Amino acid sequence: MKVSVILPAAGLGTRMKSQSAEHTGTNKKQFMSLEGAPILLHTVRKFVACPLVTEVLIALRGADLELAAELLSQETFAKPVRCVEGGESRQNSVENALAALDPDVDIIAVHDAVRPFIDSETIVQVIQQAAETGAAIVGIVPVDTVKQVQRHVVRGTLNRDRLVLAQTPQVFRAALLREAFRKAREDQFVGTDESSLVERLESVEVTVVPGSDRNIKITRPSDIELARLFLAEEKRKVQN
Image 1 (cartoon, rainbow, N blue to C red):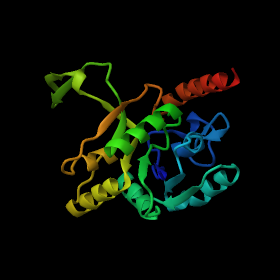
Image 2 (image 1 turned 90 degrees about the vertical axis):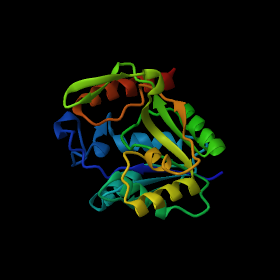
Image 3 (image 1 turned 120 degrees about the horizontal axis):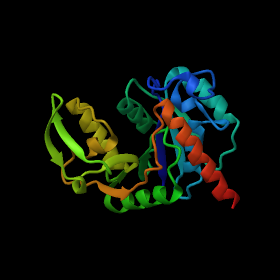
Image 4 (image 1 turned 30 degrees about the vertical axis):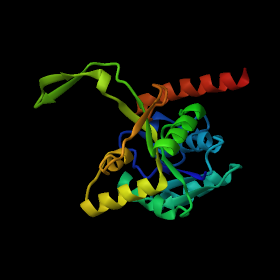
């Protein structure tokens, strides 16, 4: 089974301030330093270490390709890690990466480049689930009460038992994901994640694999301190 991982990393990081961490000449969150290495690199390492992953593709803005290549050249990976030019939106970036994949890929996983704390066990579980059913995502049940509002007025309280906060990886059989992107492009539909595109296909059900509240998406300066804490805990586990 050939499994390709796409990391969309073409975001501008508008919610992140450069002073929130050391950085590599840019305030884009994917390149910001987390204990000596860019956040993006921490994420790449997690997938390279997973036994089921065949290769990793990083979708970047054209202006960042040289910087990414330089960073990757300083690492020795046991699997292919390559960069492709992304687009103006996440959907564009993932679609560009899809076009760069070999036609014999069986499974495609898409993961936020700034979620570096995904664990290997969850990666394996969601890949295996997608291989079996066709489509699977990682998600967690919200712990807070969720209100439905209109113009700042509460219109109802939603049942948390039927809600999931979607995380990544989101994993699909390659043919299924390619068809979902083709149909979205044809219909001029823009989704917020890959699952929202796949959900539009007939007779397709997306399975949810339990995630973790540690699988955070680093988007704001306040996330950096929590990320440092998580990374320190990971290092202690390895040392023990």
